[in-house]
Length: 509
Image 1: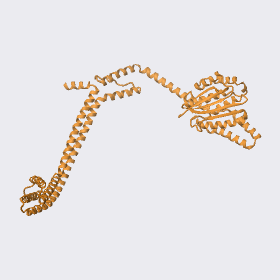
Image 2 (image 1 turned 180 degrees about the vertical axis):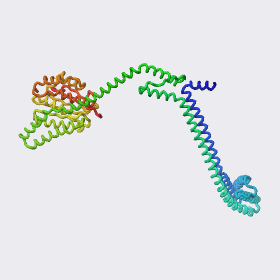
Image 3 (image 1 turned 60 degrees about the horizontal axis):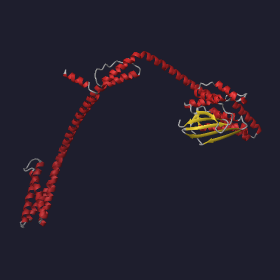
Image 4 (image 1 turned 60 degrees about the vertical axis):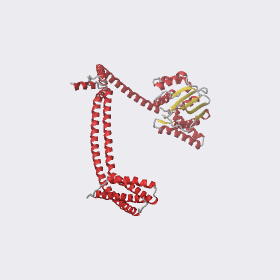
């Protein structure tokens, strides 16, 4: 009963409190594991480091022995206080070393060698002390000094042998200790791996207990997002954040189910209508593009061929050849350019061919001025965009005694702006507005445009008044290509009588 009460209290705690408890517990467990690891490492270092301690002690003994012998030699030669003081200090250290070594014979090779070294060291200390006493008493010390030197030589040899024995024994001990340490480390790593996996499992279990309701909410929310409202209710009774979210979610599901049939039917109907509308718009746009691309003035081909025939009769073969080449280039461009877009430079090249043909046809009556800032414009636009506008300007400009057409291309403000101006009679305000509205919205009455063109250009009686339709085709293609309405405009010629057509090609499109 008590455990259930405690469990209920824990479940009602906030998620932040539960996560903090889990993190603190994991931190304490990992800290304990780290301290235990440090302890194991210290133990391994102490075992391996102590393997060659006997060699270190023997090397220290050898150094002190050398110091004692050198001090004895100096005292025998110079009888100085400094040398005798050094000798006594070294002697004391040698006596301390001898007291820790084997004092009795042994069958063990190492201990027997320690016994020999110990006896030789005591003999060296005995003879050297006798030599020092004799030297201090100014008596004969040479015999004692000689015996001490003999002991020193024998002692160095035996110390070297003992050092080799120590090294061999310590190597065996080191290898054994290393194996033991590695065995302990393997056991520890295995225990640590098991412990770590248990810790991960515990964290996964407890965190899963906390986050499992969130997973349920996520699953239900995904089903609701996919319009599947036939989901089970949570009915959570806990008072933490998850319980509050679940109760709010239940209320939301109940509210949605009250209107699900009506909303679903409405959404399905709207979706079908939207798909049909999009399909119709796509088909209509494709039909418009194909219709715009296929509208070519058949009278232009007839007039061009007549002009070529007249030129062949009146002039020599060179000009006729050049004229036919320009005409061939123009028609080759129209026939071969099957793609829907070309660069501005390609369109300008077609315009040059077309203007040459028109100059041959109309002679001095036509003046063409070209102002292009750059040699190459890579920006794309629909094919056959400039030629219909140039043709329109020439037709209207030639209504005067001398027609003038001006082509200007400049870059700035994120656009490449192309301006085509003529000195013709221009458009009245109503016709111009109708052309722009038809091009921008596709719902203007093209028949009224055609009739207005007939009224505005009485002198073109006998021809098909297709000018307005051609402009609408050009501007509509631009609108469909760039998906914006600000790429074309029609204004009055700022330099006087006539009309200016403006095309703005966005850069980096």
